[in-house]
Amino acid sequence: MSKHVRVRFAPSPTGPLHIGGVRTALFNYLFAKKHNGTFVLRIEDTDQNRYTEGAEDYIVESLIWCGIPYDEGPGKEGEFGPYRQSERKHLYKQYADELIAKGKAYYAFDTTEELDGHRKDHEVKGKTFIYNWHNREKLNNSISLNKEEVKKRIDNGDDFVIRFLSPQDETLHLTDIIRGDITIDTNVLDDKVLFKSDGMPTYHLANIIDDHLMEITHVIRGEEWLPSLALHQQLYDAFGWETPQFAHLPLILKPTGKGKLSKRDGDKLGFPVFPLEWKDPKTGDVSRGYNEDGYFPEAMVNFLAFLGWNPGTEQEYFSLEELVNAFELERVHKAGARFDPDKTKWFNHHYMQEYSNKNLAKAFIKDSPEIKEVDINYVAKVVGLIKERATFVSDFWDLSYFFFETPSNLDQKAVKKAWKEDTPNIMTELLDVIKSIDIFEKENVQDHIKRWITSNEIGFGKVMMPLRLALVGALQGPDVFDIIFMIGKDETIRRLENIINTL
Image (cartoon, rainbow, N blue to C red; front, side, top):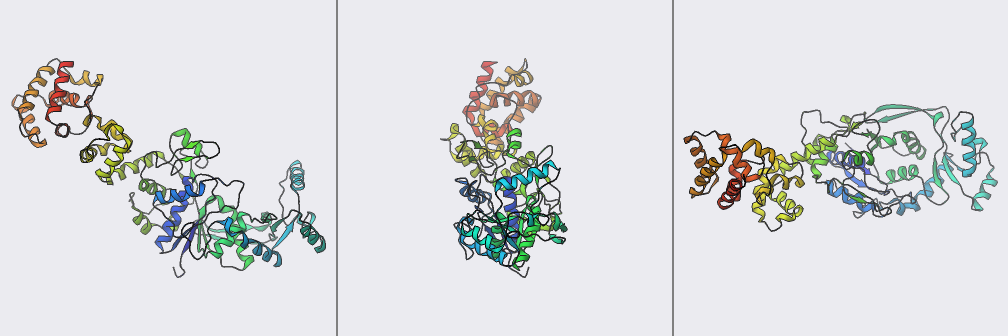
């Protein structure tokens, strides 16, 4: 692209960052990096009533954990800052005044009670009240009032809003990278509020001004903002500014049923919808996070990338760099993308295999007080033997406890299957074989036991199943000879003696 690409992710700090917001941030990041552009974080905190303490920090920490850091934003000040809308309040009034001077906006003094009255009157008649061209000349505003009255009200400090003057009998021709050409009849649009007498702009005005001043070239945002596209395009036209290119991402849908994914869906079906754990400062309620539930950021990012986008190939596993290279907005779908929690687990299992055994061992030790004194190299070897059967680090203990302690119980179903009438005699003979082995390396132990089985014409199942039961307490786990080698000769003998004496 000839023009330097600048995109922004502009969340409101009203609570934790939803997984849909993370996907929006990710697609912005991928697009920016694909085109050697700049990824901007802007905190849209104009709605002070809904502002939540700690939410901004949460957003920043979430992006860092996901591995999608921003280039400019709070704490990374660039030439286009500040990056919090609350710190940009002084900018907006002059632009609102400019729209009034151009005849593109007007003052409205209608009280809440007056507007409620109009709405109720319309409802009685089976209509919907819309504040626009068909009734604004009859309402309480600077179009219906003379200039002297308007000035008097403003000078008196009367409450007012500034509304956009939506045109009558026009057709807007809009373009979206994902959705193509869109036409809108301006007669159905309302005169949106842009500015309030308390000095704060609404989202619509602040959003447009900030995007312009920050030289944003592409606005990539969620589908819920598509109905606002007409107003935003009109605002750009009203100011005489170059319009950025728009791309509206599809909704992330519930795993089952209709509608978009919500926290309630996660609570109901047992999966998180936030990247990090969140504690509500008002209620104290704790919401689960992907990090705390044991997911790797790479897995979550890889999964999110496929919610509404595909590369056009059979490849499913992508590093962040590979995603950057493959990503194209034109390959984003229009239709909603269904969230599949099992698919996230599938990705997590894959990325676990990519992690080094030593790093996983560190996480395992941290997660399991039972092994905090165990040598990390030993734990890493154990991890290497069992991680293929794990989805989370939290699965490791159940898959490997027998490497660290003698099983205290025997699985009774396994006993019934593996322990027959002649098993005690076979295990006693096996015990003697194991005691006779001097070089206790895996291959040597394996060779001795297999030769003994073959020479005595004993079925392998009659030996290996009860041997596994003795070592593990159940018919599970990795290769028996790996277990024997790892726990050592003395412990192997001890466990065999225990089961012979017990059963």
